[in-house]
Amino acid sequence: MADTLEIDVDTLSPDTLNQRFEGSGTRAMLQALLTENADKRIAVISSFGANSVVLLHLVAGIDPSLPVLFVDTGKLFAETIRYRDEIAERLGLIDVRVIGPEPSALAARDPAGALWISDTQACCAVRKVKPFALALEDFDIWISGRKRYQGGRRAELPLFEAEDIGKAPRLKVNPLAHWTKGDIDIYRTAFSLPQHTLVAKGYASIGCQPCTSPVAEDEDERAGRWRGSDKTECGIHVADDMGGLP
Image (cartoon, rainbow, N blue to C red):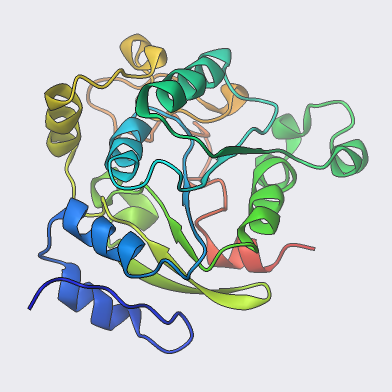
């Protein structure tokens, strides 16, 4: 039986999908997801960070018109903005949607632009989590580039997750969940995909400039995010943070 994917986010268990597609090829799974659910509203979320180009290349090879949601917090590296534009043009992505914090929210919560110094959780909430949650309301299914090897909350990452956030249930897909760092490097090299320029400077995971630092060779990939704190995620992948937004 061919791998086809018919998803009703209200009734179909992610466990069923995980059992069915855990051994499938990533491209075949994505192809099934996109072609068998043309009536669903689907988007991919991308930070255009260190390894983002692999998922974007896979998606662009199937449907370059798929909406790509990119959150510009106002605190990103200039190199990330340039990389976003380079990759979008290179891959022919025609619907990259730039999402940003509401000016009124910034005026109320972070008028000096320094909230990250005193409360990184609140800074992420106002600059990234809330704007993303609002944008996500327009979609039934969203695709993320997280991987198990990144550790922390991601170590047991399934291919499919159910989310009950906001007004309706939603399906979240992690097609690269089982990929290793070696898999990422091999794929990027095979297709001659450009890498974020900060990787060469030791940045293995790239977020906002104030809260991202280079990592040593013996450190985990995400060790440079919120260094010195117990924070490991911005919040868009944490259901409690997404659901509890005002």
